[in-house]
Image (cartoon, rainbow, N blue to C red):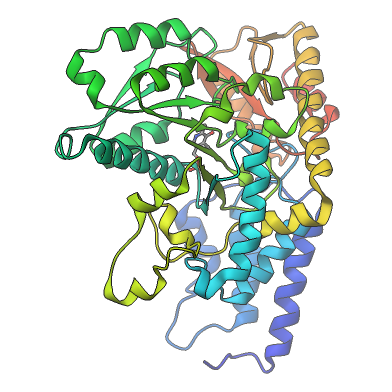
Length: 454
Ligand SMILES: *Cc1c(COP(=O)(O)O)cnc(C)c1O
């Protein structure tokens, strides 16, 4: 295709310059949303029969569209789960984009898949999974949880030898489980039951026991998986993994651990002991795009016995049969997908570049800022700390405020480009929540928030 620009070299320089400048911004502008009507007026028509030219499209992106997206790597983007990719990871994302690697099969992408598997091994080792463990990078925790639970159901059906081919499956999770577990249940047309949690949202062994003891004999047969969360998204608390694994063993059910956000804490010696029991999982997920300094979108999905997953997920078609030799590792076979980007490569490149010690230190650094930040919040007269952070999420209240005051405060902070902190709810009350996964977030950033709340 012909470009309107006189020289593709000019466009190349402009695009690469833009990317490198964006990567180096420290901090990037926080920016904020605009309505579709505003954007239409500001951007004009961009998709036209003759094209507007690359330089003009880049200008529209840089001047109009990018500023209408909040920079999730800004050190005071503290809502939801932020992202904080390393420079090496983002640079390598450009290389992945340039390389047209089909990441679904060893035949086509073996070199890249080898590197992705090295990165997966790093995570499997953090979790203490056996040498046989393996898996694949999928888009996110939602896709990872679904694929793991499909594998769990497959093993359950295979073991039942036909008895459960039409039985509706039952998944047991906890009240604090992420919404993607319920979404997986809906997608699979499976039931999801929630065991009681403590007031911090952590599954309780007694609650799990009570739920299981209350099941009818038929329902016990329907349990395909126990799902525990290693780092709940709202409060950052870790379920008691040993107790959950015991119950899974007792039921002969699959044990899945959702560490999409919190699994990264495995790299930090100061909290590693809280994950005891994770090594017993049948599957585990962690999103490197959350707290392991990789760009969107990447979820590491690991299985204790990848062959179970392979038999659940492999797609068969005439044109694919050439790929199915038993000794080749085809990433397509381990999740609900086929074509895939080698999205684990930016994470691998970053690990290879900086080394795993740097990862340990970076995760510890965010935990230190979280703990010290929680102390400052606890000491502030106008604020109330709701609980001691277990990982890197702090929940707290501004004394005397209700929803409208929180919302106005939050809107103003974003409009001024200062911070992105949205109100959330906790035990039926409006509260504030900050999640620190960015090593560039400092105690001064937390101080700024505390002052802004005075
Ligand atoms: C974020 C999160 C998910 C979903 O991950 P996505 O990458 O957003 O799909 C699932 N589980 C937990 C515990 C999470 O924090």
